[in-house]
Image 1 (cartoon, rainbow, N blue to C red):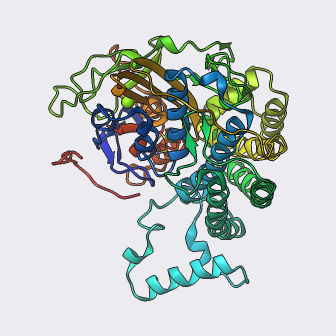
Image 2 (image 1 turned 180 degrees about the vertical axis):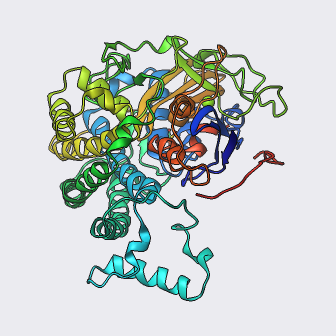
Image 3 (image 1 turned 120 degrees about the vertical axis):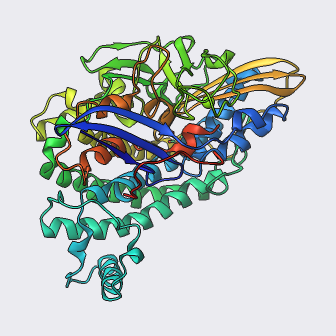
Length: 523
Ligand code: NFE
Ligand code: MG
């Protein structure tokens, strides 16, 4: 029996510590901890409500768009103008989000997850003409010649022993890893057409957006989107399938909590009630036994029994945040979001499953075709590979839809409406970030922020035990998992990274002293 501590485990901003106890090659216990405190919900108090979207965008450089949109939805509702958003404003918000979602999904597969499956050393004896592959080959060659593998970040250090792809597929994946960097730049440029820049753009405003459509900006967005759609269809999706074919046992790994939640995303109307809005990807709650039900935001709570906060467990609209770094028994800076007291996973797989069960024909076809290829039932979506496949399919779904949304823009027509800051009000914004359900709640007093609460995707997925001692989704995915080689715990990192955790988002809430860590490995 041994304990494995991986800290940090995420290849993206923020620190996630995963600790598992392994006995006879099986994970017996798991703890997920956010080791960072940031305090957004505390320092925003007393500020002008319209600043909220600029502050909350800074929660994360990976998904600032989602925090921005969620914040303006929250303020639209608090200011009483949620049903007044002009079509151009609604569609441009969707297009800004689409650009960021596409960028984030490509980032996740190639730059955050692929190196757990792809053996980058296959580039070492490459003799072809792909410029990206040549660059990686020469980079590795220089480091090996100098006898200095410390130069090899982000490729090393790494775990050894379970790289299974044939050399030609490894080499193609390395070439595509480099191409994906260019694709992400292109997606950022596309997002910035309407967002103003990326990250942390000025393009969103309460009541709509700051820049309207023109024939030129529509054409520019479409040009970039066309290149991205070609990459998604002909590179990203085939690469995910190629990896999945060789690692097919990963469809059996990482099941999780068996329940999912989606707030829905990409607005098709401006209903004042966010639970009634028609959205491209629908709102709902679903289970691994394929049942679907409506989502009621009043049933969301954040538990704090094991979280370093002294404020009580509460519905986020009534909730508050006060840090308590030395709280007995607490092991993380994440709260534990729950729905009707149950543990729920959020993310691309939950969104795709809710859309699938809601009868979305396009989603049903793409999911069924992929499952048929692997001769697998829909329940395998609850797995390491199911999460990767759902994310890749969603990337195509959103990119294809965004092209149609461009046709609905009307140059010359309004793209925002004026607003007034109310003396007192409450608001709620529900949306989906690339990593899952994102909610903001505001309470305004004397035209200032009295309380502001964010419940973020990685807070759901990386959550600790709740008030009833139920482990969070990632903790549940790990408990029971097989670990073949404790010195190279590929299973643990693959299970966790398939959720695409981002701790900068999740903690939004620096420990001066850090945790005492028994073992430390960068992987
Ligand atoms: Ni820091 Fe974020 C996304 C949000 S995640 S990336 O997507 O909201 O938890
Ligand atoms: Mg919060």
